[in-house]
Image 1: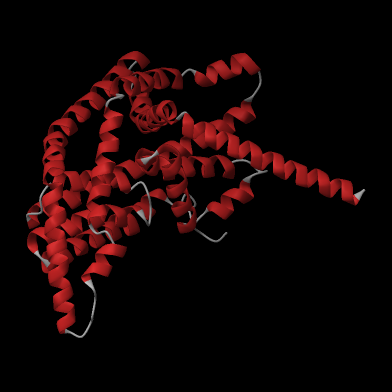
Image 2 (image 1 turned 180 degrees about the horizontal axis):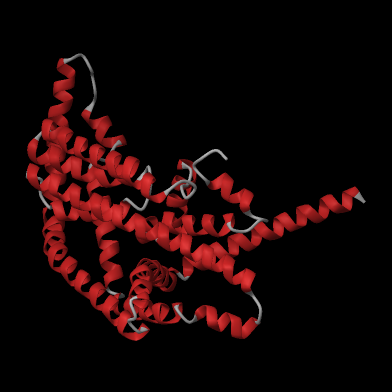
Amino acid sequence: MKKDIDQSAGARLLLTAACFVIVVAGMRVAGPILVPFLLSALIAFICSAPLFWLRRKGVPTAPAVLIIVAGIITIGLLLGILVGTSLEDFAIALPSYQARLEEEMVGLIVLLRGYGVDLSSQKLFKYFEIGKIMQMAASMFSGLGGMLANTFLILLTVIFILLEASGFPVKLRAAFGDTEKSLANLKRVTESIKYYLTIKTATSLATGLCIAIWLAVQGVDFPILWGLLAFLFNYVPSIGPIIAAVPAVLLAFIQLGIGPALFAALGYGVVNIVIGGVIEPRVMGRGVGLSTLVVFISLVFWGWVFGPVGMLLSVPLSITLKIALENNENTHWIAILLGSEEP
């Protein structure tokens, strides 16, 4: 009897693993379709807060959605104007930046040898391709540019999601009858996700603005691009700010030298400590974070499945999963394991 139970449990485990592999493979193949939809859902969740605020002020659903969509289009056009030219210039200047960076690294190696630290420039460039870091930033921006090609599809999906948002509970009641408990759980999950994304977007915007101003005052090229990168990667806690800082600090090193590069790194540290370490936890509250290990694994996993945009969506997707799990008694233990705090 015990042997049959063990075999049944093993079979269920194998079946679950096989289903997981099939689902992941399907998501990777369907990435060109899923990524715009996930991005639309993320934007719709962020925009749902102003939508319901307008509804409470007495604005009907359709005009409220039109106001929000007009705001999205305005922000998109401003970003396109500000970022488009800078992105093109950055792509043109990238080879010269890489060559200059290698020259600066050779000078740094000579300086270190003067202090008794013997490093071989050939081995250093062989094992650490410094220019790849700048190429990584360029590929990230190009991936985002690829998403802009689907702007109409994303915008249309956002409109439909927002139009359906207010009437969805009514449809659930009409379809399934008395589902107050289920609706209460669904509302709690959606409110938690909406609150997290709204606060995270506000703090990310503040982070990006502060970084752009800091670098512009220093005279680092393309501060708007680096501010945009800081804004996007602020959605990835712990690891994201470091990834966003590396190419900008390297560019400061190429342009201005080691001192300004250290000052730029100091700026990133101050901004992220103040906003991400002090302001955000006070506003956000406790219990919504992910452990650093989970953040890293989700970054690698979703980046592998969906590409560069998947890296930016990794933590919002994981946070959404965690909030959904912690609002279910049967899966609350999984949310505890994914969290950043001890219970």
